Image: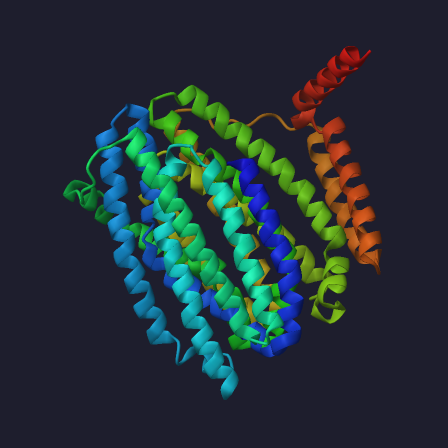
Length: 495
């Protein structure tokens, strides 16, 4: 699942690299900024999902760990029925909002009408994702995700080609939601066919809507709904707030400056998603010793990878944005550093929360998200009004640290382990610190004017920082020793 997830992230990143400049030149910074803000509004509608898919994955994985196929089948069929109902509610909400939101972002006339219609189509594409989350969640709980990853890659390519064709034919903003809809339909069809065959082969239990499962969902739905509302307030409000409080053009600058950070976050988030099903299996089967080992290894490796990626982001994001869409769309060094730091901290905290939910404490984790979201949303509004655009990542930094600590302590308690951490050495502090400082300094003074030079310098810098981590950071000593052993074995074999 991890490799497949990275492949799909690469495809989505490539799609953005090609489509964003085309869309920006086609519709202009103002309309494009409002379109990005509409994505936040769709994210708010997504709170209707109630966390059903996550609950399904955890419950199905836990049931399989106990050998209870009947319960697993009930959670799948009942969860799928719930998602279908929520899909309809999602579309009702989108149709109610569509006529009004362009005015909120100071878009009027024909641009406003086009934006409203495109918003409805994009909402339909996202409503299909609600159903797909339930379908794909079944395979994820069974840890059979290869076909899903291939389907996601294929659907992304199809949607991308459709969007390019629409732009080439002069369809403007419509090109984006049309491509999204084609992708969602393709992905849902492929996953539904695969899960149907998987279910018949491995289960064969009759599908039914089970009242006990509905009661389980309803018992958790309230806290999860509030946590989803909190996640929307934290992670799906920033662009819309900039567009409404400042200007849509500023929202475009903010969104494009942080675009590379979003890729970093997607890469880091794959770690938690990849181990979620297996971690739930271990906890559900009572193998707490193995679960504790997995938990600590995941956090160690993700933290190290986060620092490496953050250093690269600091060093090259300014040059990347300038080459990609022009230097006028870069928000400055201060925003760059704060966006990168806030994104990495949010990803690490999110992984800890995700794994805490895998222990079965989904409702408890929701309460943490609720508290964090209220604080961050208020801080975003206050800081955005007082200090401008840098207030958004500053609010993220101030709130994610506390949430991460709470998740960690509660997970350790559920795993019946001591929360004593390993003793830090000077190298475990100095190596990451030097890497981050080097990234900031490179970003301040490095200017790259061609894509070929950008690729070469980026590759060299990444290799250098990675080698430094591998050789000097104690976390990587075991990995380094294994690599040396493999190299020696390979040399012995070739000689």
